[in-house]
Image: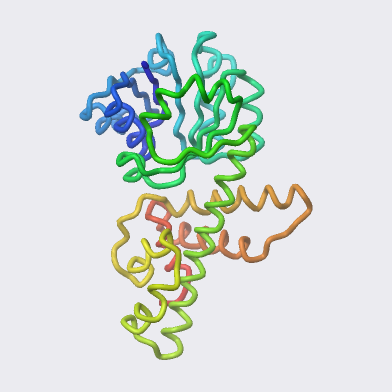
Length: 280
């Protein structure tokens, strides 16, 4: 298939590489053209506009940072959806609000929400999990694409539910990372050294938190999930709960910690930078 990927940050680039490895023809576009370089080096073609990227495509895929970016690119009289032919399937992989996900599904029948669990390295190695939300016929139609992505596929009857599922997972991971940073502060304040903390807590945390264990202790972070985006993700989860009249104090505190670390100059660093929000 010919696949247009709109947005070539770390995740979009990982998706492009994986799909090209599966034999698909990939065309990429990014608002900052320089960010297409890695995908182009791997074999993708670079387009100079969204219209050029989606011309003749079988699938158009967006991988963008937030609701505002997706709305700007996808919706409106000159947006992505207005440029797609009838037979083109729109796949949205970003972490966005369930409301916007539902709006996109309403705007185009051949739409699939496909948020990703796992980092770019997991995508490239075929080990990520994909949360597919949409009509079963659309999922079947995208079989060649989904087979090439590999990993695990979980399906949901609507795009909105797939977006909720992504937020729930991110919420748990981000709260866990912040909680571990707090535990390190308590341990150090009480007199434990870092080696003692490693021995005590190293086997007590989930793999997603364990991956950032050393970075939370102060080692350079090699991750990819930006602190500002972590704050955004927890905020979206809070919005879901608040829409049902519920307040989540733990998640609110975690969101504030990520916002604080971002405001301290660490917005583009991995979410392990939340350690800066705590005494260390």
